[in-house]
Image (cartoon, rainbow, N blue to C red; front, side, top):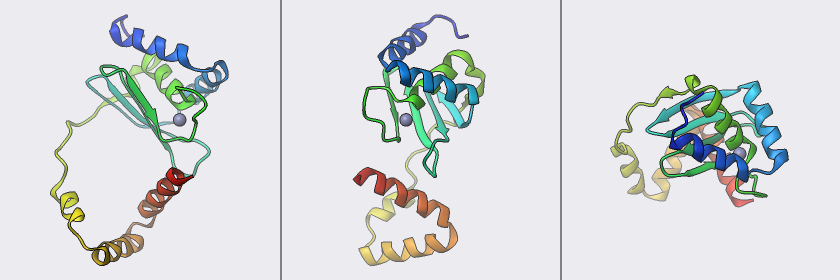
Length: 148
Ligand SMILES: [Zn+2]
């Protein structure tokens, strides 16, 4: 367990916001402990959580800013089961979170992308499709999710 600092109090109020069924599902997810790439930096905890979708959900809780989020489609309440699972992990298994490397600045290559013409961008996507198809699939999948 963590010490009872501000962070823990924040987490408890977060858990109180969750629907009881969501709370229960979140606890089950936490117990299965399928956390991938769990990291924390300065009170910001992130993890990838495997769910029913073909790609893991990206979930985070920022204790300093008091915000949280997830890429799943749950919108029936303020807190989804993945965020609940992450909150349990922070409370009960903080050792799974490794320290994230300090954030590097946005690489210049991203800035370069913004300046490409549509044709050049398409060509780049084709190339990506050949070399890293799984990356492009994940990208496309998250676009489709957003539109639904
Ligand atoms: Zn979620």
